[in-house]
Image 1 (cartoon, rainbow, N blue to C red):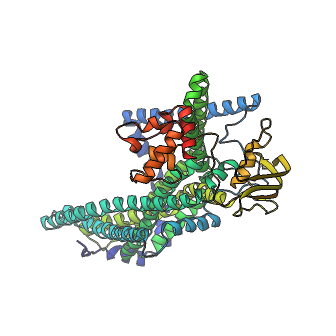
Image 2: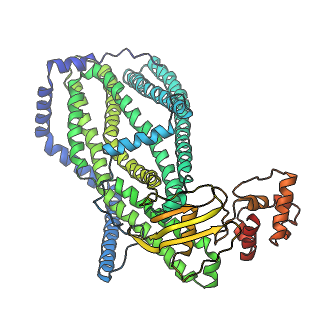
Length: 606
């Protein structure tokens, strides 16, 4: 099926040799001038005679215009009301105090630098699993392009030649060519879908594992919520990375395939049309694309804002699940419903607003595609209209195969020009993920650099000052120049009014917060903490006592005996009095234990 057909379309090329590009365009201008009135009148008459078409045209365009105009006016009125009433914007859209203007989110030099950084994480080595998947995807893309270009030209030529000449021989050739194309295309396209999904999953696995390493290192999961102004890290890890991986894998195929399609289709078509006509056509397309692109809104900020709103909406639901009992006790269902509906309305209004902005983008893209077909048709049709050396069968066969190649070539070129829009969308996800990476680098900084721990038999606070971070980045002083020594075996009770810094002292001692002054020394690795809110891990009853060591279903007689002793001392040994014993497991222990039982499990762990 890869044999090139015995083309006799050289007449078109010869026609161009005798009639240059300028002459051909002059002939087109003359034809338009002579037949302009007839062209308009004929098409207008055909349109008006087709009553159902006119009705559906007016109805569909009218509905589209009315819907978009109604939503636009609704959003404008809502914003005016909010501005007049002085209402605050939702947290996801509230501008954070920043010392300088944020950079524009687009496919610029910084985006490509960040993209390379993320790809190096997903594909760390040439022989890694991700690299092998990309290679397989790459080979399938090349094969698809070969199949499309070669077989398309062959099947179109055989079919048109068989119909034009009423030749059964050419028709049988078309049947076998099409069967081969069908078999090859089925296998290649299925393989491409599979490989693209595997590349996306591998990117997500690598990036998420890498982010987990940093997220769980140096208490970053705590620092990002208490010290670093970063919204919804869980949304960024679970959803944004997944979207980035999917779009990156898709973009690989949807940028490389058009490029290869364009080169191969152009090479084939130039044998019949020469290079001047295709190059002139694509130069015109580039100019049109630059003009239309200036009319389109930037996509990166839209994607980033939509993901922020998604995260806020998800967070509102997560908070309701976490505090379900408290809300039920306080009969707060109505208030929570209002909060959830407000966050949903914000999300929907944001997406509707962006959809309205994207109308300009979509109109420009669709106009670009159709004008490309028109201009391409002009450049392809003229040589055959002016050729006088070809028979009718040769003319129609050569024209159809060349036209098919140029259509594919033009489509591929148009897709290449529109890759920039897809890159802008990818830039939105890349920006949010890189914010996450940078947040992990923003460690809480000890202004005096003197927080340290040493192996010793006492806990020492020497002239320690502690400040609490405020949302605007400032520090609120809680404790100043504290002197305290706690020796082994000594009991100390710290008291004081709310907000005076009692818990903050323990945060400094644990290394969660930096001391803004003085030094803290404590026994290295020999301090056990009992948080105010007991934490129960996802695991067995045994794991609740041995945490942070997680043993799962591994049974050790000595360990189990010690665990049972601790449960008995804490007064919750009854929890193990089930058929599963210490292997008892629940998806969420907080849902099955009372507040007192959770506290006692914390003491058993101690």
